[in-house]
Each structure stands twice: as structure tokens, then as C-alpha cells.
Image (tube, rainbow, N blue to C red; front, side, top):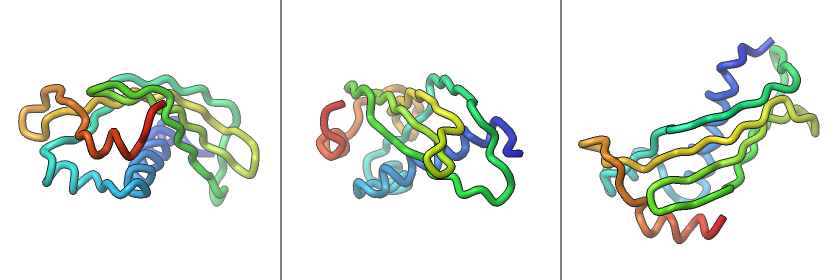
Length: 114
């Protein structure tokens, strides 16, 4: 069975790929905008176990957007069955100081309103 903490890794990868699909790589945000995202809060419900060799699909849905943070609802699915669901708040921070900063306007425009 998949260890429970791995679902957080699955969700992290899902958010990274979601941003990449919008045209934003984590590395480019850090390099070009001096911005990066950090997880500030998470809630996960574990409903069913995934097993070795299961194909797990992770969904990403923007629930809330603010000036410096996003709330993301995510699910890990096997077939149509929900294995785990989570709500993750990510905050935008300055890549050098790690202090909160506004999300780059071009990224906010790409994700649209929640």
C-alpha cells in the first residue's frame, strides 16, 4: 500500500504540473520573478489505499486566490474512485528572503478567479 505521506508528494507534483500547464515552471518563477510557493496549510482525508502499480491521477482545482496565496483542492483517483482528497494553501514568498510577497500578476491572470 502507498504510505499516507506520499499523497502529499502526489499533490505537490500535481500542482507543479498544473502550473507548468499554465506556462509557469517553478524554476523560472524563482529565477525570473524571484518568487516561489511554500505550503502553509494542508488538510488531507484518506479514503482508500492505493497499491503498488496502481495508476493514480491527481486533480487540481483552484478554490481561492488572494494577493499572496492560493487555496487548491486536490484529489488522488484510481479509475473514478477517490483515494484521498486535500485542501492545500500555498503562499508566495520572495525566493531570497522567504518573506511573503504578491503572486506575480501574469500568473494570477493565467489562473483566473477562483
